[in-house]
Length: 232
Image (cartoon, one colour):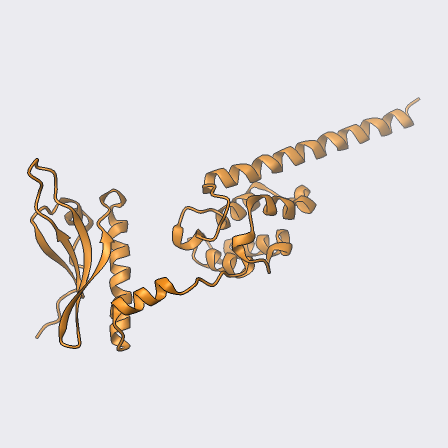
């Protein structure tokens, strides 16, 4: 018997299918659609994973179909399905494993470990560009490396950068802002001061420009004083 293909649904189908029932994506993943409401409103839809466990049919909910997120909702549902299938392959019940994972306390990584993982996951132009990001973290934020990442705030980053203001550029601020941004709950759930990536970047750049401006003014004042001392 031929194996049923995986990933059968398209993002367009996820948005447009209104027929009530289960719509298979493959590998046990289904989009479950409710009947339309009496007022004609589209029925609710959700992702479910259906599997056999010890001879019985089981169904595990994977969350709502978030139409506003487009293809991203389909990708996340497939990721959850793939994890459930790995558990099954190891002889584990996905429902039990997910419940145990949710109950387990999350281990908070050190800033340095966390930052390297973030950089590794970024879509950067080249290995050289990636190496520059890594150097940014080690050169400009050495005092943060061993600290638990959930204790590091934007103000801590500013303090770490102060000794290096004259060498810091906007690319450095961009790198550190993205490391500390909280736009992805999975990646940035540890950050306490709830700024967006744009807000965090702006805070770093404002401090950077203010410091550079004050440094330039001080240098100009020192030069003028030197000229007066050596004048006729």
